[in-house]
Length: 417
Ligand code: JHZ
Image (cartoon, rainbow, N blue to C red; front, side, top):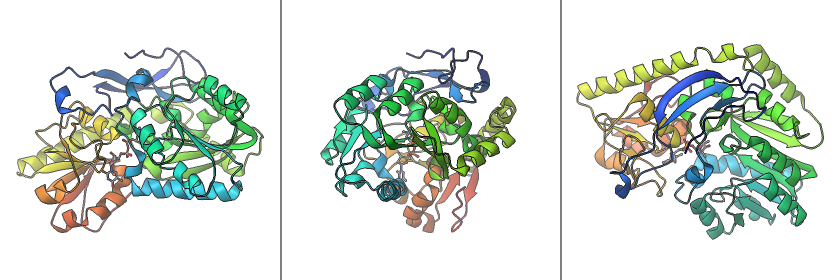
């Protein structure tokens, strides 16, 4: 089921340096139904490595994508208002900047439930979504977004291009990290993108991951963790140029790369490359104390939760996020500490967290059950979630934010980094 990679997924170099060993972990988005609880669950090693040749950070393991992004894939983008706004703003800006209209084509790779493409449809702009997960793809079609249920590959790009469907804009948000054949995927972008077109790619930023110790965003779905340095090597191999880049706060810190066939590199790209070089993102030293910092979070979070339990407090968690599965399984937070997890996503409710088998319930359970503390597993949406949970907080409930260092949030002090 998993095959350790022997070579860098981008440049092929075979001498990867280990950075972090998370032990054996369940598959983060494999939420269990009642009928699955008695069966043995897959538990696979999870190890982070650094490629000294092209600076790409990556895990060594590779689970078959068909197993991860199946019909049962529970992640639906539309459950976060902040993400919907982020996507709407992105679409609006692209429509204006590139003067998109009824003769344009916008293709989204990993289009999920159509959360982003619907913004183009509303403005009469033709779109095509491509996503391998049947559940979200069906939701997108039901919402009127034309969606192919498929993995995006270079052969698929050739098929589309030869049938006259080359794209003015290709969007790929949170997909590059999930792709085992990185080179084929990027080659496909080159084939599908019109000569004057732009590919807009969002990836979680490895510098934010390391600086803020976001180790929970490491799971089997996320094969690679990108910097501008590593991305530039990858895209350049296919004569694609990163012409602009923005740092975004979404998902704990992301990069948005603007990629084209023509080289028109903005000073922002060089500035960020220089910043990466001076902070050492392209060298192994940068990653050397990461494992130790992760261990500190594990110890202090366990100490905090056990201390609260010893005082007789009840604790629940918010967000059956994939990152939540890494957090509770690596730290060792089971049902002796957490009573339940709440999540807005109706596809997740009624299921159980992988590994620890903690039940996932609707969000109003927080107010009806009123646990004293709520561990915020979806800490990347802290502001949005705490605003929604004003009643829980008013009645005395307190959130615990685990990353970058475990802390209890006092009423009225929502801090998000
Ligand atoms: P969320 C996802 O990871 C999926 P996850 C994926 N693997 C990826 O690449 C990264 O994002 C970038 C819920 N929620 O999105 C929804 C509420 O209940 O941070 C989600 O289940 N109420 C493709 O799964 C979870 O929390 C709310 O108000 O780690 C958040 O998961 C909000 C805002 C969210 O990421």
